[in-house]
Image 1 (tube, rainbow, N blue to C red):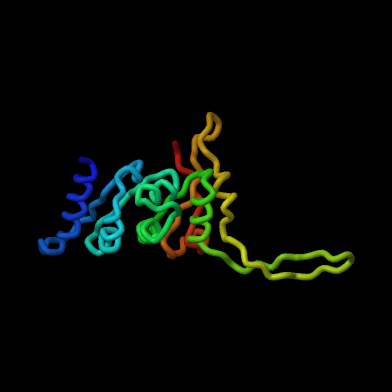
Image 2: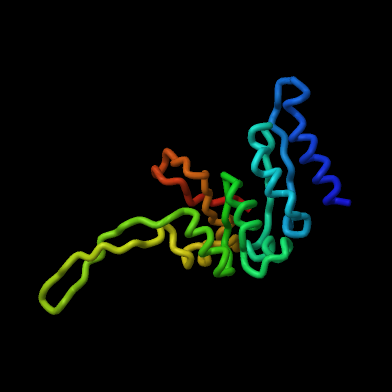
Length: 174
């Protein structure tokens, strides 16, 4: 029944331009998204922004969505669906596949790494993640003394003014 409600909302959003009215943003909100995910979600995600549709999908890891879409590993269906979501908030995750996918999404950069060989020092160029997967696994969660969840906010390739990057670390209050 909940999937039927989601499909009705998605279809209403995709028909909005036909109504010839001034569009106001509207959204579909799904906690535990993997339970409500279906292959047609990727099709909707490709066109929802042009109709001022917004999705807020929450899940613990990428594997949950892949499993729901009958993929043993995140494949074309999973990656198409989440690849079309431009703004993402990532909180602490212990799932290696999810952390690696997030790190791959943010990208890599060339860094100069000093190497010491006896008495001499040389510089080697290495290609490393901008945000290491292990960094995502160790993001702080709320405690009695720290009432925030530290998260990473990714903006689909658009740089933040604060750091010039497409991602920004932010402390979300409990």
